[in-house]
Length: 221
Image (cartoon, rainbow, N blue to C red; front, side, top):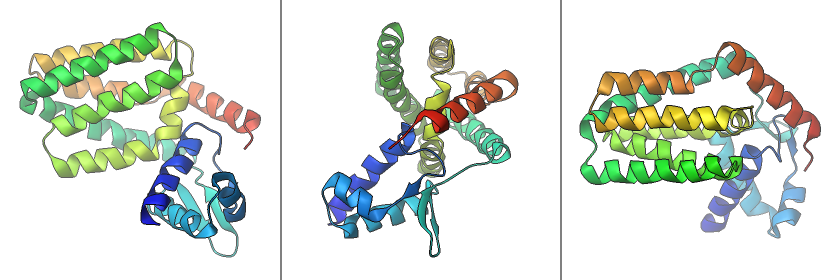
């Protein structure tokens, strides 16, 4: 049962990340149980896990819904994410082994293939691998875990960013600079590049809000 609830958590999280279950969407246990052909018990356990991660909200007498983040909260969370990424990058530039550097380069090449194919979904997953290798490469398990947790919390919004015009191409170019800085062992440059890569402000924030509005208006379960 625990394994099934864990896999259900991942499947529901993926539906949220892809916008099929948009922010504010009510999560009915009976509907989800029917959708995944399981009883309500593993669904309930999966929802509890997602609530502990902040991805959904459990409301007394009203059930669960996909968490809604205000624009101000979103900016604040991306600010923290930018600093987590910067710290991970600074440490990774100093601590990554040759094998870890090779794995990062391979992940970067995988992102290039997805970019060339203009496949935003594929790029999204390859991008997660890329950033995860930097977290691991920091060789600071506590920091890596905190960065991973917030990264997962922001998955739906990071995914939407990739659908903004030219973001796929720009993201790859930013990755390229990060890889070169890490290979050169330049921690401060890596930190600044990753901070800029993650921070959303000005036009990028407006684009993200527009994408979020379109997703909420056009997506149905």
